Each structure stands twice: as C-alpha cells, then as structure tokens.
Amino acid sequence: AAACALLAPAVRTELEDTSGKPCYRAVLDEPMGDGSGPVAVEVFDTAAQAVVGSETLFLSRFDGRWLVIAAACTEVPHAPYDCSVGLP
Image 1 (cartoon, one colour):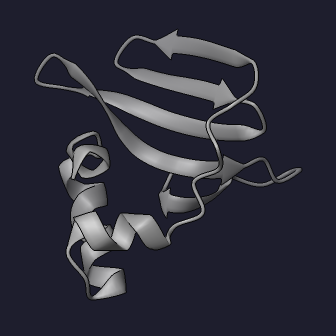
Image 2 (tube, rainbow, N blue to C red; image 1 turned 180 degrees about the horizontal axis):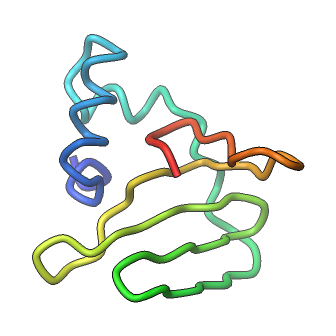
C-alpha cells in the first residue's frame, strides 16, 4: 500500500486495470529492482528523473508532492525508455 501511495493516480489505475488486481497486490508482481546503488536525480521544473543503480524512475509534481509516473525503467538506445510501470 505504501508503494501505491507514491504512484501518480493514472499510473495506479493503469497498474490495476492491466493486472486485474488491486494496486497493493499488483505492484508486488512488478520487477522493481532492489533500490541499491548510486543515486542521481535531475529536476526539470515539475518533472524529475531519478536513477538508482541501474533503474530509472520518472516523477512529476502533484499537489505539492512528487509522485512516480514511471518506474523500473531501462534505457533503450534511440528509443523511449522501457518501463515496467507507467510511461516516461
């Protein structure tokens, strides 16, 4: 439930719709990585990109707080990121 609280509303809905499960169960089925390694964050006004080890997250500001709009993303040469949750 704590992980779902960090997801943007549209991402939470997409996760539930595609899995057919409530968010708190569906998020456990996603390959999120272990959250270890060097951390780098770039902020672009109301959007941000965070790289933790080899995983990339994309965030956006919603009502004064940062929420995840895409997670477990890997860079694809000459193409958009490939994300397990949400879209970059």
